[in-house]
Length: 130
Image 1 (cartoon, rainbow, N blue to C red):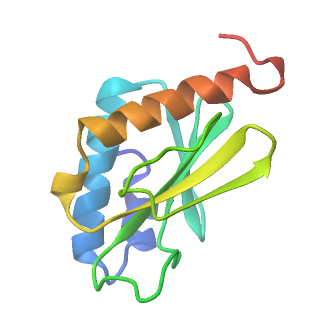
Image 2: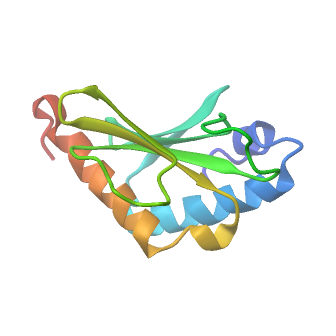
């Protein structure tokens, strides 16, 4: 796990959310190995070098489940999925999606495909080329 001590501090007192995150990070880095992970006070930022997503413990609905982790990612279109709790369009054709995960099993191929799309979409913003 990258930044292991910072991640442990981020999820302090939330061991079950940490289990979800560990599954997420493992699968993300297996598919997108050059992802940079920056642990901050309020979120864990995912970069390629541009930000394409983050993990947080923010409340995106009321009430929140007792155990959860929020994955946020940007795409060029709005996803129509019951797994997306909220989606906003802060800029034309730039949609920010929030998905609440409550179990490690929710880290699946569908979510990882969305992360791959967000990763690719971040490269297209403002002329960044691979």
